[in-house]
Image 1 (cartoon, rainbow, N blue to C red):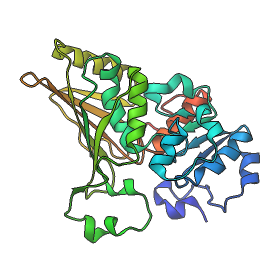
Image 2: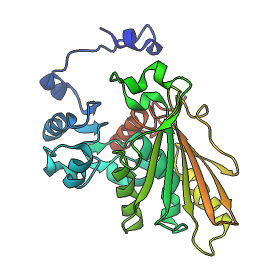
Image 3: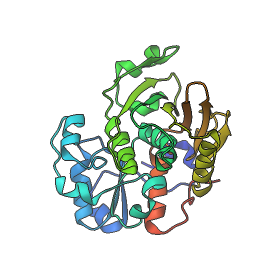
Image 4: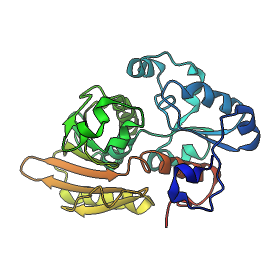
Length: 302
């Protein structure tokens, strides 16, 4: 079977074939292996390819968390390759680009953490906000739940409907906290509430933080302007302009807008990404480009 039979947008001339998985064949013929296996399943296959000195880009959560105890708590299973956790890099290019260049095991981030972290990282880096009152309100299209059959994602349940799920217990929470804590060099906890939108793809996150006393509004503007200028896939819309899902769907971009309330010192950051591209496969290609020394935008622009 050819890939074009499952993904018609590849075009009639695509010769990519879909074959039954054969570890030995893949190991012999590949320099880079992308894995899109379920959580807790990917760990063995990823470890086996890593042991063969392949560059592994794993889209599961199996190597995202540095502590095995955190993985076991959030995913309900003992980690079978604890020896590799410290050898993996969290594959968020805007934060860990230099490490990605040197690692053979790249843990592609979750979709929710990608949008949330990119909206907070510049503010943590510049020490502009209080770190004990971060609230992340995220809304995702149905494709974020994967292809597994579920009553909750059936058309009749999703259409004309909207609601929160896994409040304060979503498995992406520790990814966000781990990355922000490392950036701040102190423990950060967040309140994370995901919602399911009746759309196919995209994540819009509204992030509420409190600015530190005395921090002027223009410092937030400058922090995001500098961040976006340095990052090929981050677009800052400015103060008072906000992203929409339509403008990021089918792209690898993360769009960011902010508002600062002078009365309450509340700062609202809004980010939008395509959960299937910047939140998954597009970011995986971006990571490959970085690791192999290609142009970071190769295959992702135009």
